Length: 152
Image 1: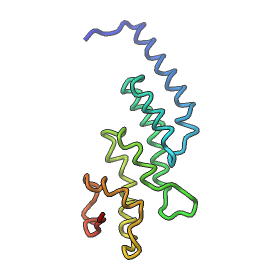
Image 2: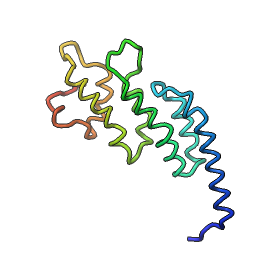
Image 3: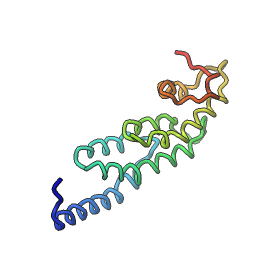
Image 4: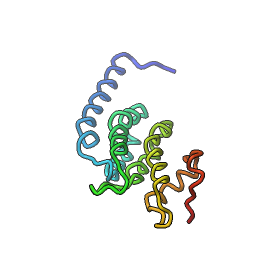
């Protein structure tokens, strides 16, 4: 594989550093709300063909996922503060997390397990738990959750 000339490497590095600074100071780090992720997801997806994989990873790892993970950490079921459902925070980013899936879903899984434990089936299955049904089919449920079943 041919190596770029030092000037070309420096130019590309400066270009990506400039782009990263612009992105860091923009919508991703300031304005978007993880509980209403559609605009941020749309912006990220629009850039996928324009930026190299290392920049995609950088944007996810430094700007997007930490904010989503903070929202998951602070999420509480049946909150009176009007917070969004847990799946509305997590699911929009699942197609983009790749190898980060286990780490990304860790706190959300704990919260879903706690919801399973606290649910009163006689009152019906909470809608937020139903949304996690497909994720649980792909291996989310642990041995403690096997006693709980969500039927259609």
